[in-house]
Image 1: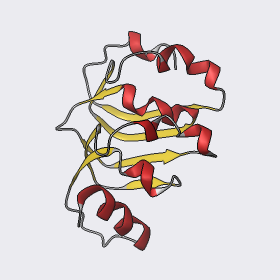
Image 2: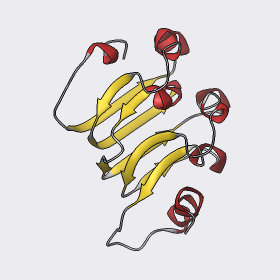
Image 3: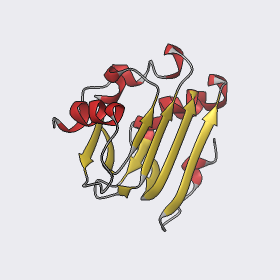
Length: 135
């Protein structure tokens, strides 16, 4: 994970997966300013455990259209830093599907834009869309 700030991958990521259950693994990255780790565009992103706290540090293009974003945390410690941000302040672009086990307060921090989806949303997804997009 610590190599991520050094990468300047200009093409679209098909899959970006970050996972760690040890906060010390990402301590240096958590000290970086928000939106300072270049990611650009991606199709799918999976953030797990303490890596969830890196989300505000990632620079994601506003016009990114993601098929899927997954935010999975085992406990409060894994998303507590996200709660310090203002609602809709963490840019993730357009998202077709979001999968998460975090509380609604975490999802409210994401600045996601609604994209039309062909399949009808599940009840859980409807709740997330209501929180993110106000629908």
